[in-house]
Length: 89
Length: 134
Image (spheres, rainbow over the protein chains, first blue to last red):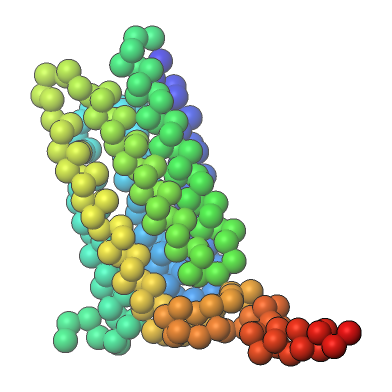
């Protein structure tokens, strides 16, 4: 029963990622695009969690942690690059 | 439907509501500094609620491995504000334009545009002086 709800929610999250892609395409400045990509990463986290509910396995839970770490490090690195033009001083 | 499924469905629905709210805010708000609020708060809360629902859904299975997802919730709550703050600082540093209706730029400590829409105190005093003789 919960699997059907999870399938519908998967479709809605895909729509949400598509909306984020519109912001990545339009975004007038670089920080806009970075923020939209960060939002896509957070949406992918929810996507993976709900996909694991649909498939009935806990295998993907490690991927959530890894993607969260990578998204955070990427956002901070690009922010530092935008601020100083240099990542590692 | 037993109680566990109802609780999972509640958390999933709350999560998807906040995720879609954050994304629509990211798409529709007028300014970068307005836009950064939507994914930082709403989407973080939505993802946390979704993960909590998944943990409750997998509670009771033999491996019982879902508890490290609570660690993921903690990590997201710690890192989302830090990333958004650094991004906002970078955007301000690289002089992204403020919204055209912005009244006060508090970081620079000055009023940006509001002169026409919000009359300054001197203008108000002048108007009062003009009114009083009558």
